[in-house]
Image (tube, rainbow, N blue to C red; front, side, top):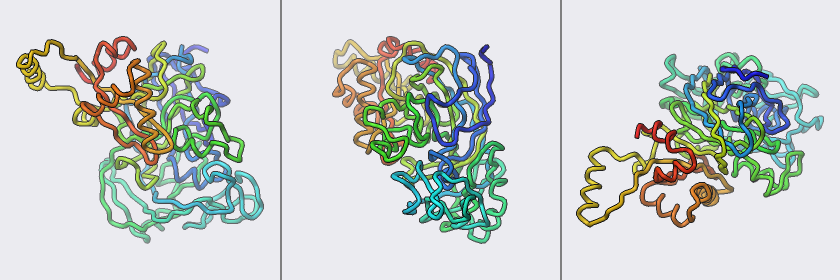
Length: 431
């Protein structure tokens, strides 16, 4: 099939990613993907027919992408379309899942696996099994809120129980659920433990990347959530070795927003770019476990980088999102550094640019080690040198607890040139 310059995506995968899913496209190398995305976590979590905790778009093949390459994803636009959403901290409901409430759900009354459901009324017991009518959600909100957005999508406000109940009656409309979305709208549960809190919108994409080399739940395509698949007693149970086939699409890194560039590994022919789980805002770490899942219209531009074999995603965030020590030097700082070198007789000065490597693992220590290891392997240096460089002129920042981080390092331009990233990084940061 001839590659298309622009592909519009409005279909979803029922909670899965992997090589068995058919791909759309291909989109041309350098082409555009425009995706209508559905809210992430809570809606799919209270929809037991899903086999993952998100509802991501159908994957799109990119012209010429082969395993061992990388795909550059430029995030051009994120437009929040939801007017209202709801979220909060969670607890599992025992007796409604096998091993993992995100994946292997069943009805506690008729025992139907991954049963189809309907929304009946509003509140915590609104999700009902189509087969027998039993209340069936495998999750409970332990402290939740309903939040509304202004017309400009710049400000947000949590509302009272009375307002939340009114909004719940037209939950799908207020959440702007896409036509092909199959999730139950979380606004139907009308949580309102926090009322009157104001905050800012700063939208970003929580789950974006390329297709892993093995079928898995979309929310588990990361080193921390993926731990739940190890030896799991359901059809998506995997080994520790198979977890290395992931692509770390489930990032929840708040700088994966408009203006950022994400460079993702290709592990299946075509790459299979997918997107979902847009958030209206999030503090670093997503410490509540969940944030404001929203529907959004997302525009991406994609390019293939031949022969760039990477273990996980590389992120080039907007410059203002870089940690202080990793930001490019100003002209004045460069003059000061040259003066310092002259004073002490140091002949050489590195010409560097910032780069963030994503790391994921069972916990933050493992995630950091994963990011450090990926940097060491990419630039063929020791892990010890990475540790020193990150400490001196970079940072480790938390994307999501328990185990997604970015490891930022100032990288010599000649190193970047060897892996064909120099021009991309220099242009992005106007160096």
